[in-house]
Image (tube, rainbow, N blue to C red):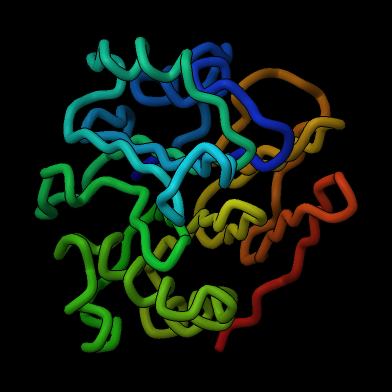
Length: 240
């Protein structure tokens, strides 16, 4: 239902990462190559990034979202060329039928220094009641984000619980806190690219680099800065 991507590593220009790749997020907003559900992602977009501590007096990520198609936003193209960050989470949206289409329903969703995107769909009724009050929107992705961001360290466990309660759910999520990325492959595509400069996690490759690899379904991925490099681990997710 959506496409998302994230970067962790050396500071990278947002325009180069999101808008200028041959099959990057901009191109995926109108012509995704691996999207199984839906054909176009025109119901909004969003990006969050973490500035160096010396460059910002506000903790946590900066965030920019819009309810319009990414390809129609001239301001994004203008501003993105002037921003570089070592951690980025971004998404384009194909809204689930019946869900709101305003800006508040667009990923990424943020809380307590974390930023989260959801690529998929689920029955909101399986989520606990305490997830709703802090959700940024009533859409399924926002309520799921509220539930997951209440305990990011329990991501794998919580995804497995939701997946068991809603077997038809697609629960690919992608989140970061500025120093690490977490992602799940559950019902949709997820790919990883490791380079000397850092790591990309994405719904689908943004170019034809042969180093891209697909993540097996029902897998938790973690990318973490360690000793000047990014270390990636993959852990199978068990159905709760």
